[in-house]
Amino acid sequence: MRDLLVIGGGVGGFSAAMYAKRFEMDVVVVSEMDGGTITQTHLVENYPGFPSITGFELGMNVVNHAKGIGVESMYGTVKDLKKEGDVFTATLSSGEEIQAKTVLLATGTHHRDLGIESEKRLRNKGVSYCATCDGAFFKDKVVGMVGGSDSAVKESLLLAKYCSKVYIIYRGESVRPEPINKKRMEAEPKIEVINNSNVIEVLGENKVEGVKLDTEKEIELEGLFIEIGRIPQTDLAKQVGANLTEKGEVITDKYTRTNVPGFYAAGDVTDSNFKQAIVSASDGSYAANEAFNYINS
Image 1 (cartoon, rainbow, N blue to C red):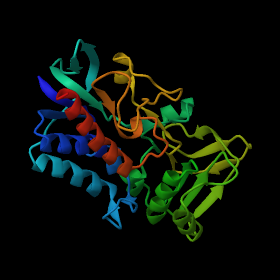
Image 2: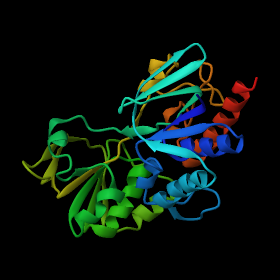
Image 3: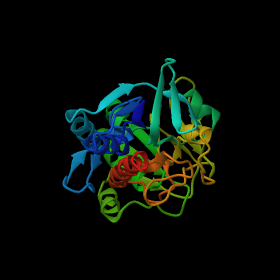
């Protein structure tokens, strides 16, 4: 019987595990990958103590810190989670079961897609959701980036290092990055912003050849990157009866507690309106402290 089961191996999950270990709790982290989605981010420049660091380095620093003090982790996917009395039972895709007194859900989010048939057909054939992962494959090519958030603009700045031209295609009046990234975007001659436009079709049979917009305009492209937000991964929270928002986020109080005793949530999977690595780390530390107090109350 574990004291704490952490589901998710990102900054929030491993921060929680690190604190739990320091509280001398029996803790294990189950995740599909170490470091979480921040490892797919090119640069992080707003995490205290690191003026500029790659997302991969930051994520792995947190993981290695936790493992360095003895945190146990295992790769796997939790398919089912239930609570009977005061005991949580997690069933992994391998069939293995883990029982725990408390659980922290730190599963984060997954990429939102456009929801059109041509996007699905050309996924991994020129359609990508990660510039850090795939940008180098488009060296000297013309690509598009769908989205107008800070993340979309940062991804476009990375793509501009490889590509000959980057079109940012955004449905709104103007893109909305952080001011420093807006200045960088405006100073980058390879980037061109197309506002008030939606991609309604990705052109090409076996590879991306362009996009068709709802303005009837067509743009020739050799690759299309999509950064239009994320969907919280909260299926396990539903299984134990945790309350969710209309967006599907886990509702927590300021101490990461949910309506289910002993069940906590941290990071981007929660209803926090500020999705940042530093927030996830804070949530994780709170969750470990709350789990410790819950067990010892």
